Length: 67
Image 1 (cartoon, rainbow, N blue to C red):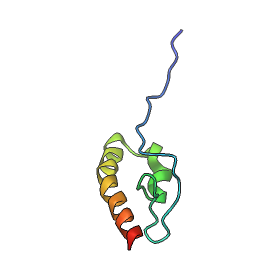
Image 2 (cartoon, rainbow, N blue to C red; image 1 turned 180 degrees about the horizontal axis):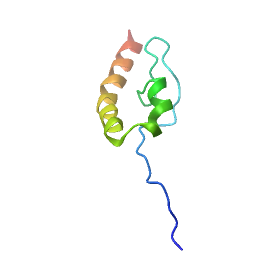
Image 3 (cartoon, rainbow, N blue to C red; image 1 turned 90 degrees about the vertical axis):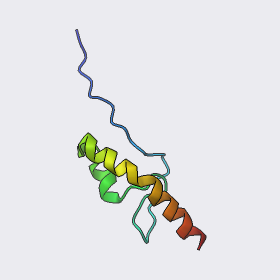
């Protein structure tokens, strides 16, 4: 008997789920509310694209928090 398991979806979630009110981005992973909600429905290519933007988003959020 073989178990059909769905492949694990890569996620940037760090379990620090708090939205920045100005940018509407999560302070933990850098995704928008919509991206978080749609993450499992996105294609692997779309998830990979979003992941390329997250470091820059988090750096901007950190810089904005200092000002």
